Image (cartoon, rainbow, N blue to C red):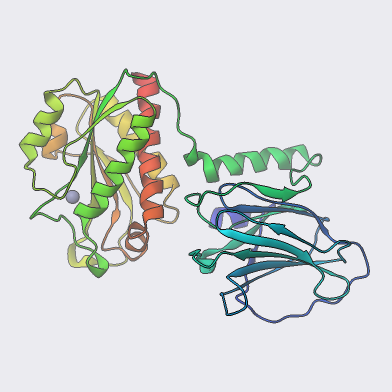
Length: 361
Ligand SMILES: [Zn+2]
């Protein structure tokens, strides 16, 4: 996040949690030029240049559901209500006071939102975006006008595209030749061996199994054959994990683990990926490490390292062992608890694997 703050293009606006404030009425037309809520839950706004926005959130009460709204200077001509879909009940454009425009997004009752994590990002002088809900909700895009910037500083635009790629690049997985590759994914531990136990009792065996299953699904969708060494919480010794891989024609072996620090130090966080030997293993480790770091901002890069772990030492194909974070670390544990972060990690691992297969396979 610090990286963004250095960039003058980016301005942040935090969402006020229902604080009252008054903006001096401005006698002019609305500063809101266009808006859109995309299928991925991102609200995009185009405004007049250098507009001051205020954003608010209010929890549901007897009268209405959870509401998010943005106030713009300038008076709206036609107040209107637009029917929502998915998690959104409706969108209202109104003028709460003379000389103001208010865009209200009202959510349905059962929607589970996390407004504390919301952040409105200024992309340039007249574009804004904020992620309101998860793409797991099925939602059909709604909007008015064109939010895309049509002209302007080319360099700024290129910069913007670059940043966008960095932020959401993990959502796109590379294509590989279908039905050509086979991958063994090894969720660490299981059964009586829960692996690392972290803050609040979070267990490595559960976290890595869930991540592994998502990786499997993502790779299967791309036409890669995937075998999991275990699919539930069972105890599986190390040799059978290795023989599962060695007895098939697997192209690669990927063992997924989460870390614990000695003394359960909460200040130790970070991600690392091990390989045993060979440039293929090293390349695979590098690709995966790069991607998992990308979805774990602020967590230290502990690097790509050589390691002599049994499962990567004894498998015949290029093999890596990934540590997706410290369950004992304050930063990592809080994330690893969340399904959204586990999904992001799975995407990242799948992406690293597909990049490798595409390059080497
Ligand atoms: Zn482990």
